[in-house]
Every structure is written in structure tokens, then in C-alpha cells.
Length: 462
Image (cartoon, rainbow, N blue to C red; front, top):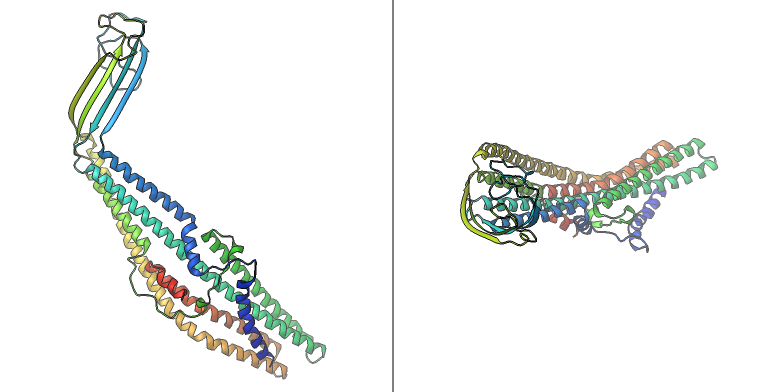
């Protein structure tokens, strides 16, 4: 009789304990699973990093396209210097400034003003595909970084969904543990009354108190698991753990539909690796265009001013500050990097190896995702079968506790049998809740492997 009353009192208490936080003022607003996933996709720091890299890659495309434009260089200069010039060659170096004009007979410390202003236009009319290959490489890099953004968002969403299920599992454990504490406390009160009436030995009270302490310890550990799960979800959503409240009654029942059958080709991780392979191919093609002639159409115009005369005399004053001689020119030049052949060949060999590595990594990711999907499918089947068995186990545990209490009250059983039955019932309640959540977790694992959370979120939000 006692256990039946306790069960009738506990069932509405269970629902009240589950739904009451939703109505209390000052409590954090509960988040649905869909809201949690959407929030993680927006605020998780890794996504911000990936988006910044995608923006940088998009800017790199614009930079690569500027190579089609003519190169224009301008120069303006004013100086005051001596004019002592000599015959002879001087190898290229950045220290000694060149002097134009004939060599002088004697050194002189006198100086004159000099000035120059000019412009050079350099344009490549054709380049055998080099510039296009660079633009293609920049676009391939952008596609890879955009795929990284999608992959980061997907991973954050999947992690948030898993953390949400972890919180629900920890809360289910906590509720069952609390119910176990209430049963132990109520039974302890009954035992104490019997002990005071000298109908039972005092040792029975001690055993019941020990069982109550064990049940309270389980509550503490389950609360710790809830706090840790909320801390994890808070890191994914940018919220403080005490601001997180969850509810989703549909996740306490079994999903009605099976996850959609499909491969892993749409998984963002695989798509990102495919983009990495395309980028490696584009880089190899760019190297293939490096060893080719470079044709340039050039035009120049410049003016120079000087205060020195060809007869080695000077004009003095401000002469030379303004340009007084000008030149212009048009030309067509060809450059061929002959000595770069060995270097380019070695770079091509290196990049070809990198391409093979990326292709191998693609196959590895594909295999791992397919393995995860098969494992999740097996886990889903096992979880469904277990979830169908736990209700009967729970009912059996309730009946066993009622019988143990009846035997104890009639003097045919011991307090140890009742304590064991209470622990078995608490564990059966925990296993019954976790069995259903295990089905959802396997459903999520399949969706993650296939790269699409929409079916899982749709089933969970029905």
C-alpha cells in the first residue's frame, strides 16, 4: 500500500518538477534544440575565424585580377649633389648612386641641383595563361575557405545538439535519483517509527540511513553532470551555464521515423577536403605556367633637370630644380626565366606530392565518415531494441520493490532486500530514460555522419 501511494504521488511530482521551472518568474528562458543549434552556428569563435579567412580569400581574388591591369610607376625627385663622373662598369648594388654624363678630369667639391619626374607603363598583352591560373587558384582558395565556414558551422551545430542531449540525459538521471532519495527517506521514516515501537531492530534504521546517503550521493553526482553539460553548451552558445535551461518533451519519447538513408558525400568535412584537393590542383597548374616567356609592352616619359653643363661648368643658382630636358619611349620586351627551370620543376614535384597527400586525405575522410555512419546505424538498431525492453524492466523493478516492502513489513524479508530493491528501481528508472535518449543520440550520430542535421532537428521538433 505504501509503495503504491508513493508511486501515485511521484508521477505528478515528476511532471511538476520537469515543467515547473518553465513557469517560474526569473528563470532563464528555455531553449529548444533548434534554437540551441542556431545560436551555436552564430557565436562559436571558430566560425568567426573561418569567416574572416573566407573574406581574406575573397579579397585575394580581387588582388589576383589586378594583374591584368597595366603597371604604372611614377617618380619625382630633387637632389643637390656633386657631378664627378668616371669611366668603368659598376655591378648592380644598392649603395652607390649612378651619375649620368661624361667623366670629369678633376674632382670638384662644387654641387648643383638636379631634378627628375617620369612615368613608366608596363603591360603584358598575353602570358600563356599565367594570370588566369593565379585567379583560378585564388578562387579555389576562396571555395576552400567557404567550405571551412560551412564545416565549422556544422561542427558547432552538431556539438551543440550533442551537448543538449547530454544535458537532458543528466537531468533525467537527476530526476530519477531525486525520486530514489524520496523513496529512501519515506521508507526511513517508516523504519524509524517501527524501531521506536520496538517492532524492528535499530540496525534496520542504520541500514536504511546508509541507503539514503547513497541515494543522496547519486543526486549530487547527477547534478554535477548537469552542471558540466551546461558548461559545455555554454561554451558553444556563448551563454553562462546558469542562463541555460532546456526542455524538449519529444526527446523523452522514441523518434517515429527512421533517419533518411544516404551516403556521406554531402558531409561538410568531406566537401572541405574536396575543395582542398581542387586548390592543390590549381596550385600545380599555376606552377606549370611559371616557366614561360613574359611579354611586355612598355611606354615611358620623363624629364630631368640639372645645373651642370657638358663642359664641366655649372649654371649656379636654382638651375636644375625644374626639369629642362625630356625623353619618351615605346618598346616591346621579352623576358624568359631560363635559370628558374630547375627551381620550378622542384616546386612542381613538391606540389604534386602535396596533391597526392590531399587526395589520400580525402579518401581517408570518406572512409572514416562511412565507418561512423555504419557504426551509428548499428547503434541505433541496438538502442531501439534496448528502449523497448526497459519499460518492462522498470515495471518489474517496481513490483519487486513492492514485494520486498511487503515481505519486510510481514517479517519475512530483511531491510537489505528492500534497500537493494530501491536501488534497482532507481537504476531502472535512469536506464529507461537514458535508453530513449540513446536512440536520439544514435539518430544524431547518423545525421552528423551524413552531413545533414535537418532530418534530426525536424524529428526532434515535431
